[in-house]
Image (cartoon, rainbow, N blue to C red):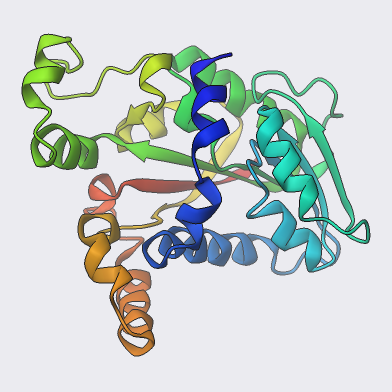
Length: 260
């Protein structure tokens, strides 16, 4: 069993996105998805790394045609358990690095909302994006989510008192970039690295969005908010989530690309 399988066999990713603080990322991502789908009467949607189906199932239950590809068998079992058979969704096991089971230029929207978290080399990240671009129609959208470097340094290295550990294990570069391997589960990036990856595929950037912004720095506060306060928090978050001077401080970002 791989590190990734072991992690997702026991981690409640669904619960994270359903929590109040986790819902900020979910609501922001869904807002971006809907913006991309606006004006496309009957879009064909692909989610690569669909996890337990938080996005794919929600879109399919709206009647949208979805293909959900997921690597981890445990996640696929949970995803399928949410379906009653009426949804226009195709579910298959597969890898973001090899989408050869899918035809060229078949989808209006291709989403990689998890795979880039777990690809540790620039070559693999570019390969996943290249495959996503291949199966996307010209003019279609590619959405790629990333975990950002600086929040990890701030909250994990310093905030959770892991400084000595990461220094002893050589997990930081001299300029404070996290060095990740499969056993570390998550790969961290900076905005300039995302831009460099984009330059390697036939796309133009629509925008880069901070999907949780400051939320994860104050989870307990967010989770304790009443409905009115949370509504105002979302208003504030949406007002700043596209500010590029704040992007690197967000735990998660969403790169929205249009295929040329």
